[in-house]
Length: 602
Image (cartoon, rainbow, N blue to C red):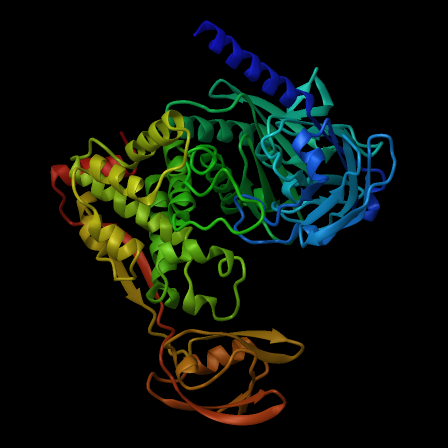
């Protein structure tokens, strides 16, 4: 028995020693940033015997970045590939498919594979380099040797000579900021890198070192920003009872225009914001809401996650029907965190709640697509919106936040204000992530909600998550002594969106069920005249229609594909409404308790 045990120990030692002998090293060089190119070299030493016998190794570039559910085909920016052995002797290689390069080893026991990446797409999901800075979104830059995603790696960074700062949460090797270590590819891919001369603002919140890495020109009150961010951090930590990081970095890109938003990472986030956002209260609060949203992802998605979202398959879509929880619950909590942190009052919080309802109910797509379907189809629909998207899709962000509100109210009511959605989040975090080290299934999410609520929640999950049935909002809001008021927009309208383009008035959107949609006006039609009156601007068209009466028929002269035609269109309304939440005239003590818990006044 002892001899058998010793043999097992010896075999384990050999396996461990062999694993340690394999060394994976990345080198990132930025020599001419004005060309927008990054130079990457991957050095893989001491290849396993089975790989050497096979005679080749594949290098793969991810096709998507976790947290952004679209196949972005990062390999399209790769060029100048080269392969050699460790002595610099050329090795043959060929591209096997869109994101795989196969290197023939011959007798080589190690390989160096190098390439360049063109990085000039400015977003939080993609890499960008110019003469002012470099932002590295790792999945769009670093390939991985197929079959060795679990392998630790070392990253050497050689920045442009005039740049002094590197902001990244990968572990420093011997305190060297230019030398970083990743325990596996997943964590390498989940650690964005900002390189340049960004402003560093360091502070401690909830006992954890934090840092803002601020790139670009912007005017902001750093002291106020740190103070408000600390309040957000502490409110978020209170939900889960612990902070999972040793450090955290906010990488912020201040832009003059273009896409804004954020992307969550394991120990950091990347935020893109208009450089003038801080100049108004609404703009500043919008930035804080983005901070709260991405920070909440530190738990929800990066650790507490749907079972499909990690470990990742970087070769293809990773489908889940739970983005309404992953992003929707996070959208619900970003406003809630601001309220708990004392950064918005209860009326502002209620306005944000009703905004999610209005967004959902005013979208014709809400009658077509459920939030579960919206989650599953994110890969082909959410990030690829077109002129018909409003008629066929919904946002799992706002619509998911609406579901979170219903569940929170149901739990508060069922527990007489003693429990809320926080209890569900904590339970799943402690069980599926901390105890089982895996993601959760929808069945586990539903069971957790029902256990905390003390009742079955089939109506919410069957009718509103997987179905498109209308929600009786007042049934749920009444639990907190609230009611939803709806004011339909009865302004005469054709239900289309117009834009002025090159001295022409062009149709951009027609809403399903509205007059323009029903009577045959198409997107991209040019509106020339209405009832014989020349239309020279979108505003003029809208003003004229608003002066008509509902039910009246107007004659719309338009041009389509170079041909002029006239269509009779019956004036109606846009089909949208204004929504507001108000208090019931009288409330019971139980309703008051639920309301106070909902807005977190106690």
